[in-house]
Amino acid sequence: MGKDEKVDEIAELPGVGPATAEKLRDAGYVDPMDLAVESPQELVNVADLGLPTASKIIQEARKVSNKDNFKTGKELLEKRLEVGRLTSGSKLLDELLGGGFETQSIIELFGEFGSAKTQIAHQLCVTVQQPKDQGGLEGHAFFIDTENTFRPERIIQMAEALELDTEKVLENIHVARAYNSSHQMLLVDKVKELSKENPARLLVVDSLTAHFRAEYIGRGALADRQQKLNRHMHDLLKWSDVNNGVVCVTNQVSAKPDAFFGDPTRPIGGHIVGHTATFRIYLRKSKGPKRIARLIDSPHLPEGEAVFTVSETGIRD
Image (cartoon, rainbow, N blue to C red; front, side, top):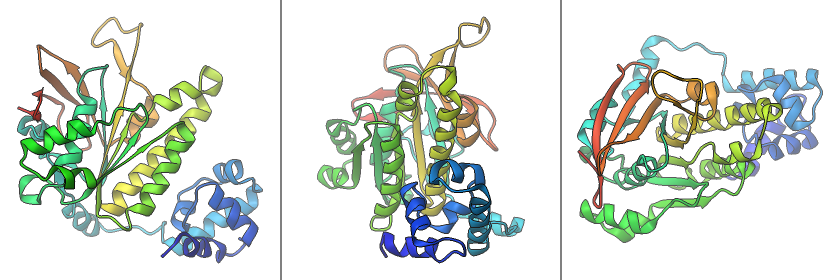
């Protein structure tokens, strides 16, 4: 099934002609489900449509994709039973997360430079390929690299420590360099396509906010930035849902000079990232190779801390 088939689904919606379908595709909408969850105003902005047309298209897309249907608690429980857990390599860190990194969710790792965000991301790319009884998900990893942080040599070290075939491990990790925020968002669409051909179970974005921060400068650009970031986060969440995969995003912290009490740092991206991420983990340095992970936010787990180390073999207790 190619992209054209998807476009046909959109083109077949009442009120959508070939020209409008083309506009919608150019704006990144590939199936009716994408349109069903959109707001009319956003469609007006990105696809250059009138408000009545945009509203009608969204209504028709909702009919087709059953987006307005309620599900019973029982159906939702069945979906929760499909949730897998991916090991970080550290038992204590896994325990903090209720057994590991959850599928169908976004985990945000934030902290200052050198706090092990990228190290954990590399470790997950290796452990995701392990059998399920060893804390893996038996799948491929996708890595969207915005700051040139991906290191195949590091993957080899971690794979050797787990006695895995290093060549095979590297083959199952698909890396793309994102050159700006629009390219970064486009790469998620590419991951969606490639996930149909590969058993994709992990998507890493390292780092989530660097491009957005560099391109949208000043208060005037804040609304645009947050709107774009919001769409990006929801695209990631949808991917995790469709593929029953783990999304791991890293985020930097900005100094918060008005905070006299507690920690003077906070993650970039504000409430948009905070509300969309399912789990938020604050990482900070300790003595030597030790790092401290603090679970700041989770739908069902208590706040807590875990200490782990970063060694040549990877993330360990």
